[in-house]
Image 1 (cartoon, rainbow, N blue to C red):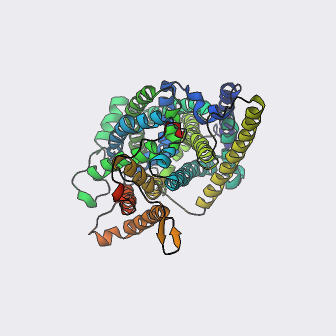
Image 2 (cartoon, one colour):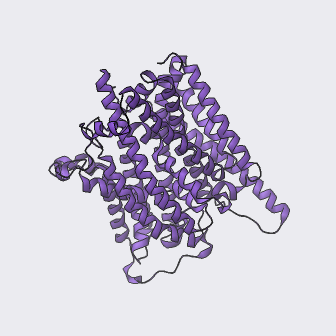
Image 3 (cartoon, rainbow, N blue to C red):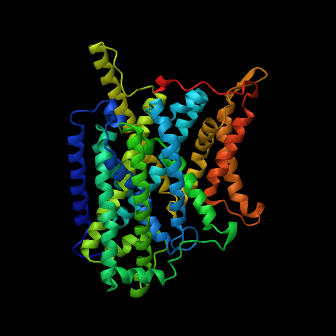
Length: 523
């Protein structure tokens, strides 16, 4: 490591960064720390700030480290093939902007899973909320786990600090700047962190270019003439994990479920005054996201080209390439911007995830609402104080849960974090995809309970549990059963289809017709 960028120096940089975040938190939450501010920022968030912040939340530490590392690692997402997924995102964002956002705003939802209660029933509502909690807990833990590994390797480990302390410190810092303001604070901190993250990637490209003694046009030529420049993969057929059509369709589905059906991402959209602003946010965010991903893929290609030029051995875990080059081979300034970018990438995703988990549990399982005013001043004040205490307790509970899951991950080695994340999402988001698709595209009512003899079975719950298990088995044996075909990210579609078919089997076709419109007071 550069002598001027010691572990102590890096810790100082991190401390200064978090001092800024906590200062932002203080100014954004000092007047409002009630449920209305925590859940939806009083529905007053400015859409340009939300658009900037959502870029960082979407990219996260996974994109910051794993996408550049995957460029030259071979297999899924090799070279620039990940852009095929990113182009699929655009189709997904279009569906969110034109179908989901108008629906959520029309119903005035705080938690998007309240829609399931009105359209299908209370069991589907709880199942949908549960799968979000499970999905987001896994996703946020994966992302923080990745960053904690890097910090442990290059910063806290050399100082003799145990991995558990590294993880606990990271989560406590998130809690400190989110526990009061919630989404109101995160709109501002995520915008700041997105700027830091993109600036870090851009400056790293600049420093790599300096090391290679070339300018921007020279770097473009290097990438185009290298083995890493291929973007579209058509020739391999459906057995190729990088096949364009598989990647494009997967990108669209991933976007719909991991943004449009995800309380974390939709909570930011619902914090704006109206759905027109939310649509502007989605349009801006989706376009900028394309260029942001191109930047990270270009960075990955340049890192591999640089490693070949200087004879650097590629780490066995491709996720380690970026930190190895930035912290041990480039000038100290490159290491500083890498640390800032890494922390910003991790926390722009994790902070909103923790807030969304808290919001969903409070609204969907504890019955809290954004506004609770009856006109009785003393009773309202007492209830607001009691709800704030409960919310803080839930916030602490999910912080502990994230710590526990990350420590469990530490017992399992994983060198392709981005692929593991999306595969996990395929299993846990699949039932959500099936539930929402059934609600949006059919007019059928579902019998959530089925009586067999003297017993009533929670049939809908069983369907939503069986679909991910069957998907996991089919995905595991697909090569043998389907002549070499691998689902890849398309396991998400298969999972959702199984859920949809299960709901059809539970439908009451005798009452076929247009369902009653959802109640406007559902939120």
